[in-house]
Length: 523
Image (cartoon, helix red, strand yellow):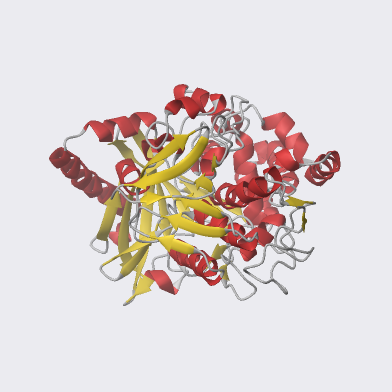
């Protein structure tokens, strides 16, 4: 008789867990509070235009990487997927000058050196470190707690020169790193895309994905990718139930006996995987005493483990407006939440027909929001919240028009959203769309997802490791199933996504080396 895996949450981690559960021969059920799959990997329509909420680049689009195999296995991408191949990561503007991080590293080196010859040595080191960072790949074959000594040796060899980047920058923030440069524009360039509190190595790894061709954008937007994963899951026989929020999990005799939905329905299973926000899991669904100590430490120390969200506005503009793929500009200081900001992010989406209609394209801008900003928004009464949003949209529009006079009278507001939007839609802690930030304090955050005191319940998703994001979510969904298989004596051997579907009988619990988890059943 098949064992049943019950998954709480139909985001990327939940869909991944469901797909790998089916590939491993489990019965699988997903319960999702919203009406669509994907969690924060989503988008929505306004006035016939699509607004994308998630993918600025997708790490793992390069064939031959472990992460590509996972994305292919879960149906997110395939040989037929069409991509936007980014020519640049982003552009920073200051005092009439601009600097771009091009996908072509030599082009970046040349442009930055011409801009600031006195920074030539540091620029060359920057390019060298980006090259080294191409060697940093997300481990996606299996979780590191299942590594053998040989696995660690292979990982160390594959990381190669990237270890030099970690050694030099692992405890340095982007703000501190930027001070290595004399050029004010290059200093802005280093701090514009990610919060300045992020560890410097985060920028190198992100940029390296673009420069290595491992960070393209699948055409069709974030929600379409989530729907492809849902389709894959259903084709494998998985069941997903929408508009089914989980209220609590019943724990009896150190086991999850069942979960109770908001509508009172009781759901039983053999194993439970919570892929929801961990702040919701610990304290509402189960007692907070079950939270791992490392995670509690992160939640309690907001300065050392901050989170980020955003205040965002989406517009339509003429299709021919193209300042660059992603551009940061100076603006008149603007107070948003608890902070005052003087830089603005501008991104046009005309690269994909999904965002274009009647000669217009979608333009979006976003302003980083912190824990303190969330608290500001949270304190506002409902009517005042709406008024503040509307006033801010007007001010953002004015600053866009000041930066790009040709937009005056051409901007039409589609929507705006705040950290509270993410809290409402995804139960996101402080409205964060990522996990705890990897800061320059040298304190990495990573937990397995096991819950001490409850044998058949674990959690999986981007909150398992900083800084979160889609790669962490999709791999942790897979890892949860691998751990269940290992802990229950189902499999031995290594996980491998190669040859994952040939000759498989979906309802069988007997496997050979061509199966998704590539191991033999041990009875």
